[in-house]
Amino acid sequence: MNFNISPSEWWNISTEGIRLVRGLARQECWSEVSRIYHSPENKAVATARIVSEITGISTKVADDLRELRTPFIRPADEFLRRVGAYLTGMNDPEFESLGDATDRIVHCVQDLVRNEIGKSVAIVSHGKILTVLFSHILKRHLTLDEWQSMGMPALSVIDLESWTVERGFFSTRAIS
Image (cartoon, rainbow, N blue to C red; front, side):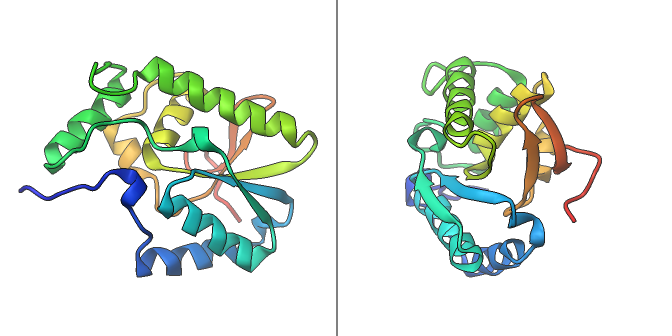
């Protein structure tokens, strides 16, 4: 089965996605968040804007939360092959290496936290970015099943002092 997958900067949030983000934004877990940082891509901008409108939390673009740099991908199996390359740690010379992506994302998150000392922040980004971040946090490559298990939208709480997942996906505790 072939279908086109647009470059991530062109993706927009769906009507169902808007409904799900509104539900996620109404959870009480936002009360301690001081700022929402988001990718510059349309889908993340729209998601952050919806959460901001409901919670009153200000937003700010963080360019290094952008999706992984990959060439245009058409068939679904090619998309999964390329995502799978990140999950298994293989590098494809056609796109950003796992090491470069990990360095970019981890440094970005560390900088965001340094700018908000003593505060909680939210990050709105993309599934492949989260795959790289959680692979770093968990000190192992995520499996394809784990990558596919991340809800869209979904919320995970990370303690960046200890680099541990406190609540949400990839933890044993659910968000309440």
